[in-house]
Figure 1: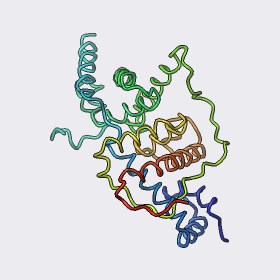
Figure 2: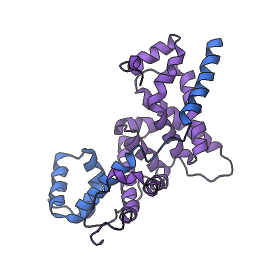
Figure 3: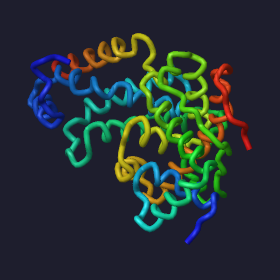
Figure 4: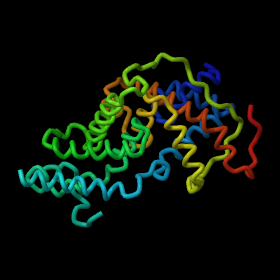
Length: 82
Length: 207
């Protein structure tokens, strides 16, 4: 069975997660082999996911850790007294 | 990492804390600081509020540590506490119109990706540039909240589909649908912007 581009787009997320059924996976892979548009959509999506997951994108505010542990220390000390 | 504690797992540290070595809570939560902050930020969309909520979530985790049963990972339990804390703060923000946290428009139409014929990979070194980091942050924070939550749990916190479903109290099918939409929305939003990141780079024509 041949599938169209718009159907392939619906499978991109599960394709990236490796959770497609073997039958669907085969159809998608066959389509990707000859469709440069869907291949580029897949590559760009994968690229964007790698970039957004990078630690540098969402960073802790400066001093976050110090302030947090100071608060925790106060809580821990007061818990020891009670 | 301190050498002595390297090989202790969370369960051992938690048992020790509950036996009275309460100062070990510092060590227990150190690997989770960033993930708790990011989840608080994803809902509250404001650094100061997110820091405040994250601190409160850690304090609540400390006070309720005896209730942690070890069925989920400690990190997942912490994220649940954080989401509850952030949601209750969202609800108490008065006179501010907020997105509904409960409505799940999973039956909305499909998201079409940005079409292109070739993708030149953006290497991770591009993240050294602040403009690139800001582009990505903005695109994620512009996602509707139900997609943003799932996306961050899966991509940034690296939870499984099942863990994400349990943390959010939604079905696995919903996680998959929301994750797919989030990824497609980001592709659609970011592809045209990222291609301009390096004007010297030659790109093939767009459809």
